[in-house]
Length: 295
Image 1 (cartoon, helix red, strand yellow):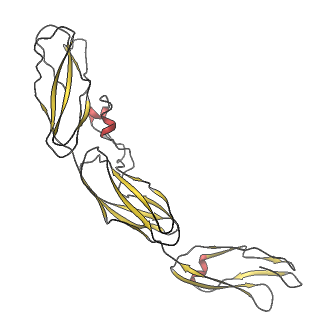
Image 2: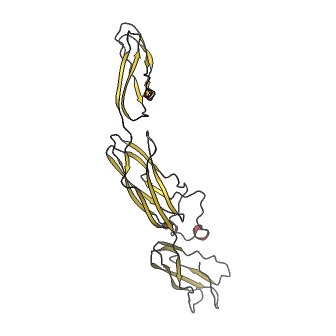
Image 3: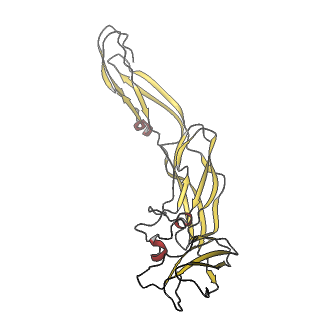
């Protein structure tokens, strides 16, 4: 704003009566200009309506008529969409991560910053079978998985970012189920400066725990030498279409425990419709006939 006159000119902005005028902010919105002086004015605009824009702002500066500034443009809404209507994980195994992919495309002429969320998902850690089988002393083998908060079973990578105009972002969605249930959730897309949940994607799935069967039920070691290791093997059969997870619990030994047992392969996975071979090593601590339960 320039003062081309010979005297000081106080100025103030007179906004139009249109509702969209409240979306504009002028800094500064008033002041004083000496002769020949200029003032840079910053204009901020936060759109609340879509469509064409044409507004006249008047600057009252004490002259016979106000100075007029015309602002025009076009407000475009976000235009994001997924390349699929839903993600169906189908049947998944308990604690086995399963990943699906989708694509989020920005067809608008401006960059959009997005954030993904699943409102009904938990916030606590999940337990992956791949982590659990690394340690057969984990308390979850004996007591079950204990949650202090509902587990966060869905992971989206990336979960937020910026998509340039006419560009896209590939997203991986992973479900690590720690709940035997049927899932029906929504991935919501929040767009910065536009709104929350502007796009939604349905996510479905079903979690199962397979039944594993040991064979044989009795493992005979016949005659064993005292305090010498002896190895036999038994099988764990998985007759289901789901991945199973097994863990041989560490033996709770006492001073008078007659038979010590252990396994070099105490934990593992059993693939669908297959068997796993589990070696068990015993050391007899006292003479006589003995039996013990391997859990």
